[in-house]
Image (cartoon, rainbow, N blue to C red; front, side, top):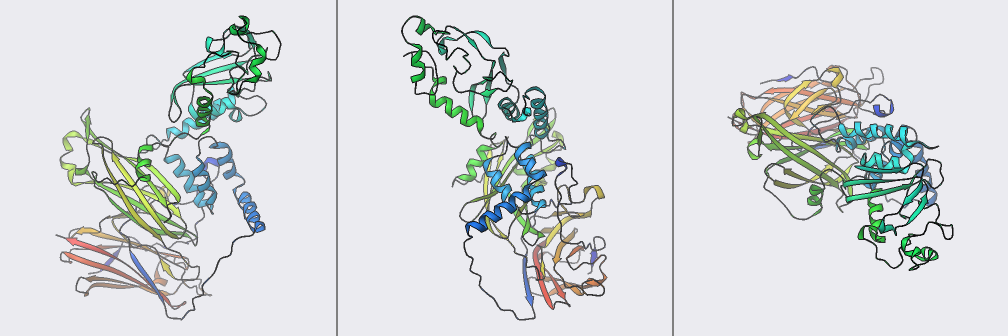
Length: 575
């Protein structure tokens, strides 16, 4: 039995630097977006001896810290700085800011930007991101309507509009003038500066019946949020003018307004204020308004943060690793649900299942490193539902990580059946030494095919220029063809040909440790062979293999460096 190439083995230069996003008018570089298969074991050996030296790190001095901060500021200057400090200033969370600042390459930042918008997309199954489109529409609207010597998006009205959209009700007094106070502000007539009262029936994370007052005390058109209902009173500092009912009746004196300790200048005397005007309520509402809008699936976030485990929605989770640079590795995370475990709601003869997914990646000490959230849905004609029960739904997520050990926690919720599951997985992200021969995970796939030029680096299951859909459990039937995908890094280079020299051995070993299939391939004969990255793509017919468990073993021998690496993966064949 022979290994047949899925196409001519792809070899690509391995240093991949992503340019800034199209959001900033730049050309995005190729990126990978693949789901993970079974974790593959790998080992590396070198015929030359080496000495291990322990490195003891020393704390950075204040001068070194300041230097690193300046380097970071310089690196973030330009489109990335504009994106964080202008485009998403009001909607990016503090955790996201910190995570973004820790990124080291443009490719990582580009991936972060894509994930940032994706986790806010209300319809992730469509090409359009309505949230993103609406966000930039709001910025344009704010610039058109609220500019006042500074761009409209920088004003308080612009900030609130961008974050929460148009108010349900607006009471506008653009010229100020005569104003009859409501009784909760003390009543009585006065004259005001220009002001606007915005009312939102509900803002998630803030509350119901949210009132926001903007006052233009400078008469320049620049309104600011006011926590003092009397700040709009143009006669506040004029003795005997603009008195409240309590002051007119002699029950209080106007000078008492300046002795209040609740941050207002209300002339209500000893009359109790309603709960909505309580000092702490006003401060709390203001603090909540200043926060970034809440994440989509806060209920799932809470589940990840707790120690309670759920298992009413069966799912399988796998991860594999593809090198981006020496310091960055893509963790390709895949979650699979069987259709038979999902609940479907039927409407207009269409059956639909919907699953909300929230994932969090932390260090071993539970410090948050990254997170993601998405919606997976499955739709089909109701009459075909029974036939589809043997199928499954697969979700994939690509996350850039630095080498190290992490903890992945995922919670999934079936919104139709209200079932849920939590899953924890260790992510052992490999470290790739610059001069050491190494490999990625070995991915065993049920789909392995080249993608169109305009889809290279993007889309579900796409790694570089190929679509690689892993078989999550690595279980194949005898009549199927198994795809093999793996990458080798850091081969030696011949000074004359600028090519690597070496060979790749493929072996399939059964449970009795007997080699049942084998093949050898010369690296120099692979099209576009590069010392930086060799990508192996093969397809194997399984017809000759009896049912059982097997191990696929690959061995890359680098003749120039005199090094070898032997990644492997296990799989099962069924009848």
